[in-house]
Length: 98
Image (spheres, rainbow, N blue to C red):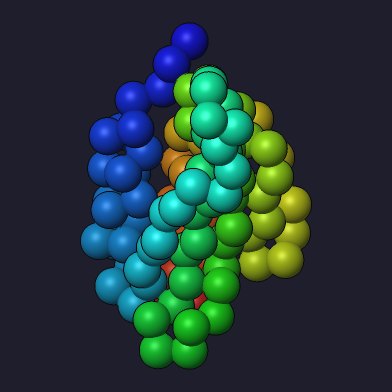
């Protein structure tokens, strides 16, 4: 099943809209020239350039290959689920610090 890359970008934009001090970058970490593309997403703080999350996922299936969030391994297997989990985790962190 192919994922919709626009959905991934929309979720990343939603994540930084809710957290104004954050930004993200996405690039191709690996491509075999035929059918496999592994994308890497970095979510980071703008002022300190501190990386909050690093996610590598298969561009076709959405399967997460590797991920860390604040130095912890993230649990979700699909990139869309992982981004939703990150969004919820950041919201919980804001509520705890308020």
